[in-house]
Length: 237
Length: 310
Image (tube, rainbow over all chains, first blue to last red; front, side, top):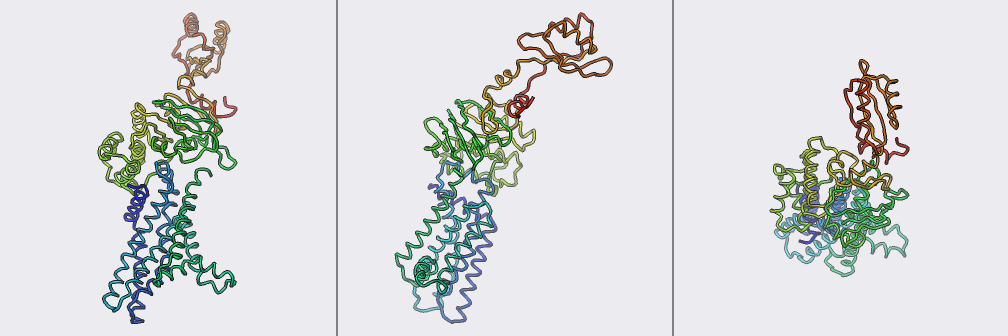
């Protein structure tokens, strides 16, 4: 078996045996359900757009919460010494943690498919393409936030601090799109390109553009590389 | 088998380990002794590839830690200080996780052997956090020996255990030492004395002594101390040492009746006990006790690690 998947398996087992993961997952699903059902009856329109625009906001809390312990807890309890003296590369450790987080997000998203079922029952002429794109966008966005969460968890031994750092970074990336009004004109292009919301809204509208995909993938790579660097820095610090 | 060459480690401006050199031979049980903060854990962490050396290198067989970290980690079993464990896992899940990463084939069979060796049968499906400290330590040992490594690094393996548990862990260490190369760090002398063939003493990042237990003791034993309990006055004792020559009185402690507890000292080259006994016999003193005072490793250790010590 691949080393990263052994680490991921261990983390998933940790999620399964800890009540915290269930609580966070249940809150995620409750909020998603509320945000889906409310406009559904108000607007009398069967679509997923409301949900797709609100899950990224729930993500802001959900993902920092599920990633904060991934490395910070190992540092705090000293098991990091155990893990890093096993014959595996630091990159495998980081990848394993990242996959575990993404898998838990995937499980959360899987449960939201029940809302898709509601729409299929209630609505006509359903745009399956845009639903698919919405989910693709949510998975990519979840990947970016997970990478940021893993990074934040790798720089501290305090889970609360890890939560705050990752919340700060994801919130910044999220808010850029909405702060364009206050930014000098010549910078708006750059800020818009850096904002996750801009790229996510492009994808969730049903346009799969390589530029958006590359944006998400490169952010994931950058933050995972930074995490790896932070983890390895123990050696020479 | 393991060679440390000019090994140094800096933490900022603090030099934790200062160019130390020593070899560990195959099959040897080496005690790595020093007061707290001497650099023992840092050295072990460099051998286990948790930290990179600032200068120098460590060779194990044909590998070295700077270039072949993964190969070295495969060869080593490591029990870190304070024995960190994934306490929310059960013993079985934990060892299975280690086995998967260590790519142990035939896990079931190996697990059986290790459980036998570490005495973990009864607790295999219990979560680690409910186990006693002694059992946790055994889980740590099981983790370290699961892949049957040639080299075992144990960082203070008995710290925090009660005397019964310590005896059991020592027994386990001796058992393991029959077929493996062991490096055991400790600040407890009796422990090292009990299980190790050779001792390296480190203080403030430098090696201050290296030799077998006996060698270290004898290097501090050029004087023999003799303790006597007998009914002779101080004056009479002075007369005796004057007559016998080259014997000095270290101390005289009065006891009940006319008895004195006297400590004599003479050069170890000659055994003066016969002279002393004959003199006492001639004087018809009553001798209740006469024995040599052993120079303990304790004294050696204090001498080496405390500046301006006795």
